[in-house]
Amino acid sequence: MWAPGEQVSKLSYFGLYALQHRGQESAGIAVSDGSRILVYREMGLVAQVFNESTLESLRGHIAIGHTRYSTTGNSNWENAQPTFRTTASGHIALAHNGNLVNTAELIKSIKNDAANRGELLSSDDEIIRAGVSDTEVITSLLASSPDLPIESIALEILPKLEGAFSLVFMDEQTLFAARDRHGIRPLVLGRLESGWVVASETAALDIIGASYVREVDPGELIAIDEHGLRSSRFAKTSQRTCVFEYVYLARPDTLISGKNVNAARVEVGKTLAREAPALADLVIPVPESGTPAAIGYATESGIPFAQGLVKNSYVGRTFIEPSQSIRQIGIRLKLNPLREIIAGKSLVVVDDSIVRGNTQRAIVRMLREAGATQVHVRIASPPVQWPCFLGVDFATKSQLIAAGLDISEIKQAIGADSLAYVSMEGLVSSTNLPKQKLCRACFDGDYPVDPPEALMHESPLLELEVLTPVHHE
Image (cartoon, rainbow, N blue to C red):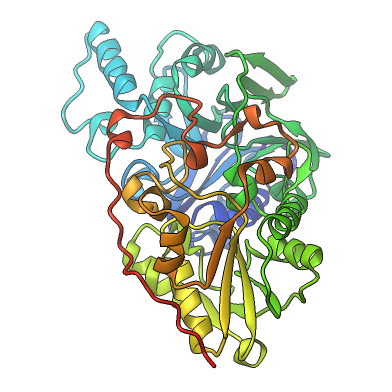
Protein backbone atom coordinates (compact mmCIF):
# COMPACT_ATOMS: atom_id res chain seq x y z
CA MET A 1 0.00 0.00 0.00
CA TRP A 2 1.28 3.47 -0.89
CA ALA A 3 -1.04 6.08 0.62
CA PRO A 4 0.31 9.35 2.09
CA GLY A 5 -1.97 10.76 4.77
CA GLU A 6 -3.62 7.41 5.53
CA GLN A 7 -3.11 5.14 8.54
CA VAL A 8 -1.53 2.51 6.34
CA SER A 9 -0.86 0.05 9.17
CA LYS A 10 -4.54 -0.06 10.10
CA LEU A 11 -5.66 -0.33 6.49
CA SER A 12 -3.18 -3.17 6.02
CA TYR A 13 -4.53 -4.84 9.16
CA PHE A 14 -8.09 -4.81 7.80
CA GLY A 15 -6.87 -6.00 4.41
CA LEU A 16 -5.07 -8.91 6.06
CA TYR A 17 -8.19 -9.68 8.07
CA ALA A 18 -10.03 -10.12 4.77
CA LEU A 19 -7.27 -12.49 3.62
CA GLN A 20 -6.99 -14.53 6.83
CA HIS A 21 -8.31 -17.60 4.96
CA ARG A 22 -5.10 -17.68 2.91
CA GLY A 23 -2.90 -18.40 5.92
CA GLN A 24 -3.26 -18.87 9.67
CA GLU A 25 0.25 -19.59 10.97
CA SER A 26 1.68 -16.08 11.21
CA ALA A 27 1.00 -12.47 10.29
CA GLY A 28 3.11 -9.38 9.83
CA ILE A 29 3.18 -5.77 8.62
CA ALA A 30 6.11 -3.59 7.51
CA VAL A 31 5.80 0.20 7.20
CA SER A 32 8.03 3.02 5.97
CA ASP A 33 7.83 6.74 6.69
CA GLY A 34 10.23 7.52 3.86
CA SER A 35 13.41 7.23 5.92
CA ARG A 36 13.15 3.95 7.86
CA ILE A 37 11.28 0.64 7.73
CA LEU A 38 9.66 -0.95 10.79
CA VAL A 39 8.55 -4.60 10.74
CA TYR A 40 6.27 -6.36 13.21
CA ARG A 41 5.48 -10.05 12.74
CA GLU A 42 4.42 -12.88 15.01
CA MET A 43 2.96 -16.37 15.00
CA GLY A 44 -0.84 -16.50 15.11
CA LEU A 45 -3.93 -15.02 13.51
CA VAL A 46 -4.12 -11.38 12.42
CA ALA A 47 -6.32 -10.42 15.39
CA GLN A 48 -3.94 -12.18 17.79
CA VAL A 49 -0.76 -10.63 16.39
CA PHE A 50 -1.86 -6.98 16.26
CA ASN A 51 -3.54 -4.64 18.71
CA GLU A 52 -4.27 -0.93 18.78
CA SER A 53 -0.94 0.09 20.33
CA THR A 54 1.08 -2.07 17.92
CA LEU A 55 -0.64 -0.58 14.89
CA GLU A 56 -0.24 2.96 16.29
CA SER A 57 3.51 2.40 16.52
CA LEU A 58 3.73 1.41 12.85
CA ARG A 59 3.66 4.88 11.31
CA GLY A 60 4.34 5.75 7.71
CA HIS A 61 2.81 6.04 4.25
CA ILE A 62 4.04 2.76 2.69
CA ALA A 63 3.05 -0.65 4.07
CA ILE A 64 3.06 -4.32 3.14
CA GLY A 65 1.45 -7.18 5.07
CA HIS A 66 1.23 -10.95 4.99
CA THR A 67 -0.57 -13.96 6.41
CA ARG A 68 1.29 -17.25 6.04
CA TYR A 69 0.83 -20.96 5.87
CA SER A 70 3.98 -22.85 5.05
CA THR A 71 4.53 -24.79 1.85
CA THR A 72 8.32 -24.49 2.11
CA GLY A 73 10.36 -23.58 5.16
CA ASN A 74 9.51 -24.45 8.74
CA SER A 75 6.45 -23.11 10.54
CA ASN A 76 8.28 -20.81 12.96
CA TRP A 77 8.83 -17.15 13.74
CA GLU A 78 11.99 -16.96 11.63
CA ASN A 79 9.95 -17.71 8.50
CA ALA A 80 7.10 -15.31 9.29
CA GLN A 81 6.74 -12.48 6.81
CA PRO A 82 7.41 -9.78 5.75
CA THR A 83 11.10 -10.62 5.55
CA PHE A 84 13.65 -7.84 6.09
CA ARG A 85 17.17 -7.21 4.78
CA THR A 86 19.79 -4.47 4.79
CA THR A 87 20.87 -3.31 1.33
CA ALA A 88 23.76 -1.14 0.16
CA SER A 89 21.51 1.92 0.15
CA GLY A 90 19.00 1.13 2.90
CA HIS A 91 16.61 -1.72 3.65
CA ILE A 92 14.05 -3.94 1.97
CA ALA A 93 10.96 -5.77 3.28
CA LEU A 94 9.14 -8.42 1.23
CA ALA A 95 6.03 -10.64 1.33
CA HIS A 96 5.45 -13.61 -0.98
CA ASN A 97 2.55 -15.85 -1.99
CA GLY A 98 3.53 -18.94 -3.96
CA ASN A 99 6.38 -21.41 -4.11
CA LEU A 100 9.66 -21.50 -6.04
CA VAL A 101 11.06 -24.70 -7.54
CA ASN A 102 14.69 -23.59 -8.03
CA THR A 103 15.51 -22.43 -4.50
CA ALA A 104 18.62 -24.66 -4.23
CA GLU A 105 20.07 -23.20 -7.43
CA LEU A 106 19.37 -19.67 -6.23
CA ILE A 107 21.17 -20.33 -2.93
CA LYS A 108 24.21 -21.54 -4.88
CA SER A 109 24.07 -18.32 -6.88
CA ILE A 110 24.05 -16.25 -3.69
CA LYS A 111 27.07 -18.17 -2.36
CA ASN A 112 28.96 -17.75 -5.64
CA ASP A 113 28.23 -14.02 -5.80
CA ALA A 114 29.40 -13.62 -2.20
CA ALA A 115 32.59 -15.57 -2.96
CA ASN A 116 33.27 -13.37 -6.00
CA ARG A 117 33.03 -10.34 -3.73
CA GLY A 118 35.45 -11.94 -1.32
CA GLU A 119 32.76 -12.61 1.29
CA LEU A 120 32.46 -15.92 3.14
CA LEU A 121 29.00 -17.10 4.21
CA SER A 122 29.18 -19.02 7.48
CA SER A 123 27.27 -22.26 7.99
CA ASP A 124 24.80 -20.50 10.27
CA ASP A 125 24.20 -17.63 7.86
CA GLU A 126 20.48 -16.91 7.60
CA ILE A 127 20.25 -17.65 3.90
CA ILE A 128 21.64 -21.19 4.12
CA ARG A 129 20.26 -22.33 7.46
CA ALA A 130 18.08 -25.42 7.70
CA GLY A 131 14.43 -24.86 6.91
CA VAL A 132 15.03 -21.64 5.00
CA SER A 133 12.02 -20.42 3.02
CA ASP A 134 12.10 -19.44 -0.63
CA THR A 135 10.90 -15.99 0.49
CA GLU A 136 14.17 -15.49 2.39
CA VAL A 137 16.07 -16.41 -0.76
CA ILE A 138 14.18 -13.88 -2.90
CA THR A 139 14.76 -11.15 -0.31
CA SER A 140 18.47 -11.89 -0.11
CA LEU A 141 18.82 -11.81 -3.89
CA LEU A 142 17.11 -8.42 -4.08
CA ALA A 143 19.34 -7.08 -1.30
CA SER A 144 22.58 -8.54 -2.67
CA SER A 145 23.73 -6.01 -5.27
CA PRO A 146 25.85 -3.16 -3.86
CA ASP A 147 25.59 -0.91 -6.92
CA LEU A 148 22.04 -0.89 -8.33
CA PRO A 149 18.68 0.48 -7.12
CA ILE A 150 16.11 -2.12 -6.05
CA GLU A 151 14.00 -1.66 -9.18
CA SER A 152 16.93 -2.46 -11.47
CA ILE A 153 17.95 -5.43 -9.33
CA ALA A 154 14.37 -6.75 -9.44
CA LEU A 155 14.30 -6.63 -13.24
CA GLU A 156 17.52 -8.64 -13.20
CA ILE A 157 16.50 -11.15 -10.50
CA LEU A 158 12.81 -11.84 -11.22
CA PRO A 159 13.41 -13.64 -14.55
CA LYS A 160 15.64 -16.11 -12.66
CA LEU A 161 12.87 -17.19 -10.28
CA GLU A 162 11.10 -20.38 -11.38
CA GLY A 163 7.72 -21.37 -9.99
CA ALA A 164 4.85 -19.39 -8.53
CA PHE A 165 5.31 -15.97 -6.94
CA SER A 166 3.13 -12.97 -6.29
CA LEU A 167 5.30 -10.46 -4.45
CA VAL A 168 4.93 -7.13 -2.67
CA PHE A 169 8.13 -5.50 -1.45
CA MET A 170 9.39 -2.07 -0.49
CA ASP A 171 12.40 0.02 0.28
CA GLU A 172 12.14 3.27 2.23
CA GLN A 173 10.61 5.25 -0.66
CA THR A 174 8.96 2.83 -3.09
CA LEU A 175 6.34 0.07 -3.13
CA PHE A 176 6.84 -2.77 -5.62
CA ALA A 177 4.63 -5.63 -6.80
CA ALA A 178 5.46 -8.51 -9.14
CA ARG A 179 3.78 -11.64 -10.47
CA ASP A 180 5.43 -14.66 -12.07
CA ARG A 181 5.14 -15.04 -15.84
CA HIS A 182 2.43 -17.71 -15.50
CA GLY A 183 0.29 -15.65 -13.09
CA ILE A 184 -0.28 -18.79 -11.03
CA ARG A 185 -1.17 -17.06 -7.75
CA PRO A 186 -3.51 -14.02 -7.83
CA LEU A 187 -2.48 -10.36 -7.44
CA VAL A 188 -4.66 -7.30 -8.04
CA LEU A 189 -4.17 -3.54 -8.17
CA GLY A 190 -6.55 -1.12 -6.46
CA ARG A 191 -6.90 2.65 -6.08
CA LEU A 192 -7.42 4.65 -2.92
CA GLU A 193 -8.29 8.33 -2.99
CA SER A 194 -4.79 9.05 -1.68
CA GLY A 195 -2.81 6.26 -3.29
CA TRP A 196 -2.54 2.66 -4.46
CA VAL A 197 -3.10 -0.83 -3.05
CA VAL A 198 -1.92 -4.27 -4.19
CA ALA A 199 -3.53 -7.41 -2.72
CA SER A 200 -4.00 -11.12 -3.33
CA GLU A 201 -7.78 -10.76 -3.73
CA THR A 202 -10.28 -8.05 -4.58
CA ALA A 203 -12.09 -8.81 -1.29
CA ALA A 204 -9.22 -7.06 0.53
CA LEU A 205 -9.71 -3.98 -1.65
CA ASP A 206 -13.42 -3.94 -0.86
CA ILE A 207 -12.94 -4.01 2.89
CA ILE A 208 -10.68 -0.92 2.93
CA GLY A 209 -12.72 1.06 0.39
CA ALA A 210 -10.30 0.77 -2.53
CA SER A 211 -11.59 0.52 -6.09
CA TYR A 212 -10.47 -2.37 -8.27
CA VAL A 213 -8.29 -1.27 -11.19
CA ARG A 214 -6.96 -4.48 -12.77
CA GLU A 215 -4.94 -7.62 -12.15
CA VAL A 216 -1.19 -7.34 -11.99
CA ASP A 217 -0.22 -9.00 -15.27
CA PRO A 218 1.87 -12.17 -15.36
CA GLY A 219 5.51 -11.18 -15.83
CA GLU A 220 4.90 -7.59 -14.68
CA LEU A 221 6.77 -5.46 -12.13
CA ILE A 222 4.94 -2.43 -10.74
CA ALA A 223 6.68 0.39 -8.85
CA ILE A 224 4.79 3.10 -6.95
CA ASP A 225 6.38 6.19 -5.40
CA GLU A 226 5.97 9.98 -5.23
CA HIS A 227 6.25 10.14 -9.04
CA GLY A 228 3.27 7.80 -9.52
CA LEU A 229 2.88 4.26 -10.85
CA ARG A 230 5.12 2.72 -13.49
CA SER A 231 5.10 -0.73 -15.01
CA SER A 232 7.86 -2.92 -16.49
CA ARG A 233 7.89 -6.37 -18.07
CA PHE A 234 10.52 -8.82 -16.85
CA ALA A 235 9.26 -11.94 -18.67
CA LYS A 236 7.10 -12.98 -21.60
CA THR A 237 3.61 -13.95 -20.41
CA SER A 238 2.54 -17.59 -20.47
CA GLN A 239 -0.60 -17.45 -18.32
CA ARG A 240 -1.58 -20.48 -16.21
CA THR A 241 -3.74 -19.16 -13.37
CA CYS A 242 -4.41 -21.71 -10.61
CA VAL A 243 -7.88 -23.21 -11.11
CA PHE A 244 -7.92 -24.29 -7.45
CA GLU A 245 -8.43 -20.62 -6.58
CA TYR A 246 -11.91 -20.96 -8.11
CA VAL A 247 -12.48 -24.30 -6.37
CA TYR A 248 -11.43 -23.48 -2.81
CA LEU A 249 -8.67 -20.98 -2.08
CA ALA A 250 -10.27 -17.63 -2.93
CA ARG A 251 -13.10 -15.98 -1.05
CA PRO A 252 -16.45 -16.24 -2.88
CA ASP A 253 -16.73 -12.43 -3.04
CA THR A 254 -13.45 -12.14 -4.97
CA LEU A 255 -13.03 -11.50 -8.70
CA ILE A 256 -10.58 -13.59 -10.73
CA SER A 257 -10.06 -12.56 -14.36
CA GLY A 258 -13.27 -10.55 -14.10
CA LYS A 259 -15.36 -13.51 -12.87
CA ASN A 260 -16.99 -13.53 -9.45
CA VAL A 261 -15.82 -16.67 -7.64
CA ASN A 262 -19.22 -17.29 -6.06
CA ALA A 263 -20.92 -17.19 -9.48
CA ALA A 264 -18.32 -19.62 -10.85
CA ARG A 265 -18.95 -22.06 -7.99
CA VAL A 266 -22.73 -21.88 -8.46
CA GLU A 267 -22.25 -22.67 -12.16
CA VAL A 268 -20.08 -25.67 -11.28
CA GLY A 269 -22.86 -26.94 -9.00
CA LYS A 270 -25.40 -26.67 -11.82
CA THR A 271 -23.07 -28.57 -14.14
CA LEU A 272 -22.52 -31.21 -11.45
CA ALA A 273 -26.29 -31.72 -11.13
CA ARG A 274 -26.55 -32.34 -14.87
CA GLU A 275 -23.50 -34.62 -15.00
CA ALA A 276 -24.18 -36.59 -11.79
CA PRO A 277 -27.86 -36.58 -10.80
CA ALA A 278 -29.07 -38.35 -7.66
CA LEU A 279 -32.41 -39.34 -6.18
CA ALA A 280 -32.54 -37.57 -2.83
CA ASP A 281 -34.71 -35.58 -0.45
CA LEU A 282 -32.28 -32.74 0.27
CA VAL A 283 -29.12 -31.09 -1.05
CA ILE A 284 -26.82 -29.95 1.76
CA PRO A 285 -23.44 -28.22 1.49
CA VAL A 286 -20.23 -28.75 3.40
CA PRO A 287 -19.89 -25.15 4.58
CA GLU A 288 -18.55 -22.74 3.67
CA SER A 289 -16.72 -23.48 0.43
CA GLY A 290 -19.23 -26.13 -0.69
CA THR A 291 -22.24 -23.83 -0.28
CA PRO A 292 -22.32 -22.04 -3.67
CA ALA A 293 -21.98 -25.31 -5.59
CA ALA A 294 -24.72 -26.89 -3.43
CA ILE A 295 -27.02 -23.96 -4.25
CA GLY A 296 -26.28 -24.52 -7.93
CA TYR A 297 -26.92 -28.26 -7.62
CA ALA A 298 -30.24 -27.71 -5.84
CA THR A 299 -31.36 -25.07 -8.36
CA GLU A 300 -30.57 -27.26 -11.36
CA SER A 301 -31.87 -30.54 -9.90
CA GLY A 302 -34.99 -29.19 -8.24
CA ILE A 303 -34.09 -30.98 -4.99
CA PRO A 304 -34.65 -28.70 -1.96
CA PHE A 305 -31.57 -27.02 -0.47
CA ALA A 306 -31.00 -27.15 3.30
CA GLN A 307 -28.27 -26.33 5.78
CA GLY A 308 -27.75 -29.78 7.27
CA LEU A 309 -24.36 -29.05 8.81
CA VAL A 310 -23.62 -26.20 11.20
CA LYS A 311 -20.16 -24.70 11.01
CA ASN A 312 -18.31 -23.29 13.99
CA SER A 313 -17.03 -20.03 12.52
CA TYR A 314 -14.30 -19.75 15.12
CA VAL A 315 -12.41 -22.81 13.91
CA GLY A 316 -9.94 -22.17 11.12
CA ARG A 317 -9.63 -23.96 7.81
CA THR A 318 -8.70 -27.57 8.53
CA PHE A 319 -7.17 -27.86 5.04
CA ILE A 320 -4.28 -25.54 5.81
CA GLU A 321 -3.46 -26.61 9.33
CA PRO A 322 0.07 -28.04 9.28
CA SER A 323 -0.49 -31.06 11.55
CA GLN A 324 -2.55 -34.08 10.49
CA SER A 325 -3.65 -34.75 14.08
CA ILE A 326 -4.88 -31.16 14.43
CA ARG A 327 -6.66 -31.47 11.10
CA GLN A 328 -8.61 -34.55 12.16
CA ILE A 329 -9.64 -33.02 15.49
CA GLY A 330 -10.60 -29.86 13.64
CA ILE A 331 -13.15 -31.66 11.47
CA ARG A 332 -15.21 -32.61 14.54
CA LEU A 333 -14.79 -29.16 16.09
CA LYS A 334 -15.79 -27.46 12.87
CA LEU A 335 -18.99 -29.17 11.74
CA ASN A 336 -22.04 -30.57 13.50
CA PRO A 337 -25.14 -32.12 11.84
CA LEU A 338 -28.65 -30.75 12.34
CA ARG A 339 -30.44 -34.00 13.26
CA GLU A 340 -33.97 -32.65 12.94
CA ILE A 341 -33.30 -31.72 9.30
CA ILE A 342 -31.40 -34.78 8.08
CA ALA A 343 -32.88 -37.66 10.10
CA GLY A 344 -34.75 -40.06 7.83
CA LYS A 345 -33.63 -38.20 4.70
CA SER A 346 -31.64 -39.21 1.65
CA LEU A 347 -28.97 -36.54 1.13
CA VAL A 348 -26.84 -35.10 -1.65
CA VAL A 349 -23.78 -33.67 0.12
CA VAL A 350 -21.85 -31.16 -1.99
CA ASP A 351 -18.23 -30.31 -1.21
CA ASP A 352 -15.62 -28.34 -3.15
CA SER A 353 -12.94 -31.06 -3.34
CA ILE A 354 -11.54 -34.23 -1.81
CA VAL A 355 -7.84 -34.03 -1.05
CA ARG A 356 -6.96 -36.47 1.73
CA GLY A 357 -10.45 -37.87 2.29
CA ASN A 358 -10.49 -37.48 6.07
CA THR A 359 -13.02 -34.66 6.08
CA GLN A 360 -15.53 -36.47 3.86
CA ARG A 361 -15.14 -39.70 5.80
CA ALA A 362 -15.91 -37.92 9.08
CA ILE A 363 -18.86 -36.06 7.56
CA VAL A 364 -20.46 -39.17 6.08
CA ARG A 365 -20.12 -40.94 9.42
CA MET A 366 -21.65 -37.98 11.30
CA LEU A 367 -24.59 -37.79 8.90
CA ARG A 368 -25.31 -41.51 9.22
CA GLU A 369 -25.11 -41.29 13.01
CA ALA A 370 -27.61 -38.41 12.82
CA GLY A 371 -30.10 -40.60 10.92
CA ALA A 372 -29.47 -39.95 7.22
CA THR A 373 -30.76 -42.92 5.18
CA GLN A 374 -28.45 -42.33 2.21
CA VAL A 375 -25.46 -40.06 1.61
CA HIS A 376 -24.62 -39.22 -2.01
CA VAL A 377 -21.39 -37.20 -2.16
CA ARG A 378 -20.92 -34.78 -5.07
CA ILE A 379 -17.65 -32.93 -5.57
CA ALA A 380 -17.39 -29.58 -7.40
CA SER A 381 -13.95 -30.33 -8.88
CA PRO A 382 -12.25 -33.31 -10.56
CA PRO A 383 -10.25 -35.84 -8.49
CA VAL A 384 -7.05 -34.34 -7.03
CA GLN A 385 -4.50 -36.86 -8.29
CA TRP A 386 -1.27 -34.88 -8.53
CA PRO A 387 0.72 -32.98 -5.89
CA CYS A 388 1.09 -29.20 -5.99
CA PHE A 389 4.50 -27.61 -5.51
CA LEU A 390 3.33 -24.11 -6.51
CA GLY A 391 1.80 -22.82 -3.29
CA VAL A 392 -1.01 -25.20 -2.28
CA ASP A 393 -0.50 -27.51 0.68
CA PHE A 394 -0.76 -30.95 -0.87
CA ALA A 395 2.84 -31.48 -1.85
CA THR A 396 3.12 -35.28 -1.94
CA LYS A 397 1.13 -38.12 -3.47
CA SER A 398 0.88 -39.73 -0.03
CA GLN A 399 -1.56 -36.95 0.89
CA LEU A 400 -3.90 -37.55 -2.05
CA ILE A 401 -6.55 -40.27 -1.82
CA ALA A 402 -7.30 -40.08 -5.57
CA ALA A 403 -3.65 -40.75 -6.41
CA GLY A 404 -4.07 -44.35 -5.24
CA LEU A 405 -7.79 -45.18 -5.47
CA ASP A 406 -10.35 -44.93 -8.24
CA ILE A 407 -13.74 -43.30 -7.67
CA SER A 408 -15.51 -46.49 -6.60
CA GLU A 409 -12.73 -47.24 -4.09
CA ILE A 410 -12.88 -43.68 -2.73
CA LYS A 411 -16.64 -44.06 -2.35
CA GLN A 412 -16.04 -47.12 -0.18
CA ALA A 413 -13.22 -45.45 1.74
CA ILE A 414 -15.40 -42.50 2.79
CA GLY A 415 -18.50 -44.67 3.33
CA ALA A 416 -20.78 -42.92 0.81
CA ASP A 417 -23.68 -44.54 -1.07
CA SER A 418 -22.48 -42.86 -4.25
CA LEU A 419 -19.71 -40.48 -5.25
CA ALA A 420 -19.25 -38.31 -8.34
CA TYR A 421 -16.98 -35.45 -9.37
CA VAL A 422 -17.60 -32.65 -11.86
CA SER A 423 -15.74 -33.06 -15.16
CA MET A 424 -12.69 -30.98 -16.04
CA GLU A 425 -14.68 -29.40 -18.86
CA GLY A 426 -17.48 -28.54 -16.44
CA LEU A 427 -15.06 -26.84 -14.04
CA VAL A 428 -13.20 -24.91 -16.74
CA SER A 429 -16.41 -23.68 -18.36
CA SER A 430 -17.39 -21.93 -15.11
CA THR A 431 -14.31 -19.68 -15.22
CA ASN A 432 -13.55 -16.74 -17.49
CA LEU A 433 -10.40 -18.39 -18.81
CA PRO A 434 -9.78 -20.99 -21.51
CA LYS A 435 -8.35 -24.35 -20.44
CA GLN A 436 -4.85 -23.54 -21.73
CA LYS A 437 -4.66 -20.45 -19.48
CA LEU A 438 -5.44 -22.38 -16.29
CA CYS A 439 -3.03 -24.43 -14.18
CA ARG A 440 -4.94 -27.70 -13.74
CA ALA A 441 -1.91 -29.76 -12.69
CA CYS A 442 -3.43 -31.08 -9.45
CA PHE A 443 -6.17 -32.65 -11.56
CA ASP A 444 -4.38 -33.71 -14.75
CA GLY A 445 -0.61 -33.50 -14.10
CA ASP A 446 -0.04 -30.81 -16.76
CA TYR A 447 2.37 -28.54 -14.86
CA PRO A 448 3.33 -25.05 -16.11
CA VAL A 449 6.90 -25.64 -14.83
CA ASP A 450 8.81 -28.89 -14.51
CA PRO A 451 8.07 -30.56 -11.16
CA PRO A 452 10.82 -31.74 -8.78
CA GLU A 453 11.79 -35.28 -9.83
CA ALA A 454 11.35 -36.83 -6.37
CA LEU A 455 7.77 -35.60 -6.23
CA MET A 456 6.69 -37.56 -9.27
CA HIS A 457 8.09 -40.94 -8.21
CA GLU A 458 6.60 -41.09 -4.73
CA SER A 459 4.01 -43.80 -4.16
CA PRO A 460 0.72 -42.89 -2.48
CA LEU A 461 0.39 -44.08 1.11
CA LEU A 462 -3.27 -44.20 2.02
CA GLU A 463 -4.35 -43.55 5.59
CA LEU A 464 -8.06 -44.43 5.33
CA GLU A 465 -9.64 -47.74 6.24
CA VAL A 466 -12.39 -48.86 3.87
CA LEU A 467 -15.88 -48.31 5.24
CA THR A 468 -19.01 -50.15 4.16
CA PRO A 469 -22.07 -47.89 3.85
CA VAL A 470 -24.62 -48.50 6.64
CA HIS A 471 -28.25 -48.07 5.60
CA HIS A 472 -30.84 -47.03 8.19
CA GLU A 473 -34.30 -48.46 7.78
